[in-house]
Image 1 (cartoon, one colour):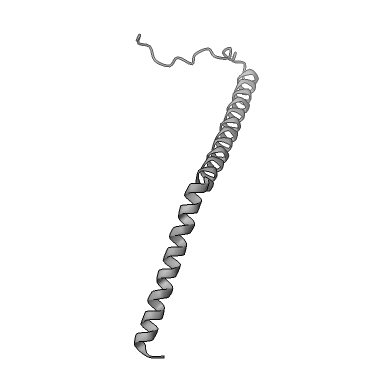
Image 2: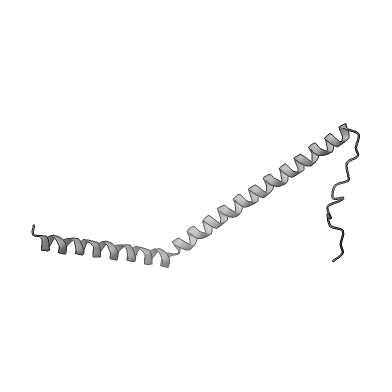
Length: 92
């Protein structure tokens, strides 16, 4: 095959592949598949975030119980839940 014919065939092949990719992208955008995928990914991210927040809250509560028990063992009285959460002394 001559170099010119090979170059024409390669150019034609690249053009066909390019058109196929562009048409496929248009179909995806029109069909809502991209939006559906984005919604699914976002919902999984929200579920993961909620799971992490729940785990962090459980860890905080567990540590609070451990600190309270340790204070009790050394004879200190633990403050009631929610007491002393306002750490600054100025007014707004």
